[in-house]
Length: 309
Image (cartoon, rainbow, N blue to C red; front, side):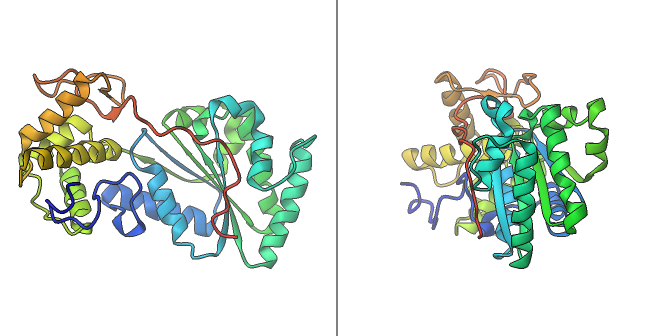
């Protein structure tokens, strides 16, 4: 709708950017290097944490996409409703019939699976997303699975991705041995004001747009109202392009950003601080925020996901 008006090849603020459109600023660049080390070198558990919308999954996809067919990736989405059924989820991820299968039976199958993949010259990556929903018993079971690496020379890479609650969970007294196996941990924080400016201009440039499409004042407002959360930045900027097209505004200004946020809030779908504490950003709106409290993508059911096999 607005692409021709703003001379864009594609939507610059898509929630699912291609590999070439992943912004690697200071924080995201370090997080990417840590993930690459954790996945490729397999020194132990790799843990990536951060608030909702900070870009954890995007960075992980970016790293996994660069493995170029050398890995089999199995993903388990650790949703709260399925927490008591972790073994069944793991069986589904690896294509095992979960009927009457306990941890010991699953580990036996996993050992055979790992040996097969090693013969094929492939590495195996187990990705546990939303890992903050696991409990202490689940993590102990995962640690026991990781013991296979001692037998099979680091054939299995385990990556846990979760919200800040995961960090608190890992401090549990019963998880001392688990913590000792964590070799890579990075906590992804929101973008600074300067990083928001570079982020927005980078995404515009990748789609052929002008880096000056948003005024400096507009970008300062984007940072203020988004709290530096990339997912919220994308939503605000996407809506600003729609508003700008509707009003035939060639360069988006601060008032456009304020209008976007004000209208979004007045519609009942507001923004909420990632820390749970409101902060005032403008007389035009209620508490300015770090992330959307609504509109999150529906959680996917845990299932087998093999990206390269």
